[in-house]
Image (cartoon, rainbow, N blue to C red):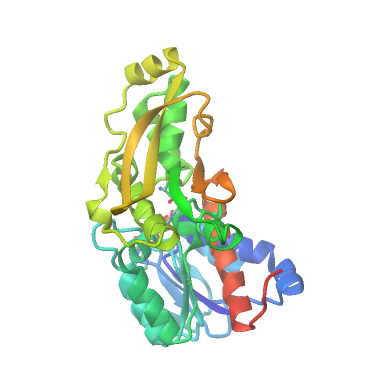
Length: 347
Ligand SMILES: NC(=O)C1=CN([C@@H]2O[C@H](COP(=O)(O)OP(=O)(O)OC[C@H]3O[C@@H](n4cnc5c(N)ncnc54)[C@H](OP(=O)(O)O)[C@@H]3O)[C@@H](O)[C@H]2O)C=CC1
Ligand SMILES: N[C@@H](CC=O)C(=O)O
């Protein structure tokens, strides 16, 4: 599998580290051999070599010298994202540019270009999946390509494959979740007395927050994830921008302490419910009783509760953000892409 990274920030580098660490395991366990042939990033530069690039050398160049263009003796440098997608010998594009919550760009263009050139895509970018899932999946199918996006909801915690595969046969009536690591981290730290701004700063340092953290704070990131769950898991496409959305920008120490005194906790929740009039969804902070199953979810950990007609409620909890954790979600998709190509059925 020849891989090109489009975007090489925290998550891209997280996946690169995993590919290096797990190289032998991936080969022996899944027969998956990977070669990174290109990286294209706006400020961190671009490098291409059809024979493959050394991951340790790429990471050294970007971390120590600030640009992958310090990588020695590659065939080409400076290719932009579309040239890399169209002209490199990559057969899998890892799309890990920032999520734009208004247009989904440039990631939508990246996915389209990849599929039109017969290249598969794995991405953690919520934009293309929240706004153009059907169109992109059709384009991928028409070109015999794989489209993987497990990490768009709850990072490396399989919030999308679990309901679609393991819970098959159930009718999922409602989904309720804590779907943003940054805001859950802020709320948890505020309970311990930290200020909102200090907690946000830490979340940014850990790599949880979006490039523009307004997306986290105002709930737009959760709104996109809600749209993805509604479409992919609940079967109804709803316009992300029409999902009522309130974030935690107004949260204060007073409100947190007041809830504490009532044995309650504030959580930023997404609720998606099937009704007689179709799927209804909204995003808003709620004060939960401390005995509620979602009340004890702390830090950047997320959780999601699927209300199923046959199995009853099923709750999944795990990382909602984090560089290695999100890198892992891309690895899950890559293994599935590899197995789909080889028609291997996972048992
Ligand atoms: N961090 C997390 O925990 C999670 C992140 N995600 C999603 O994963 C994606 C990546 O996140 P993360 O790595 O944290 O974000 P970063 O901001 O660290 O990295 C994004 C990179 O994309 C680059 N980029 C932007 N536009 C382009 C372009 N047109 N061509 C090439 N490169 C471009 C940026 O370049 P530069 O800054 O150099 O200008 C930056 O290096 C985002 O969409 C995010 O929403 C999903 C789940 C969890
Ligand atoms: N900024 C997001 C990253 C994952 O989608 C979050 O904090 O959850």
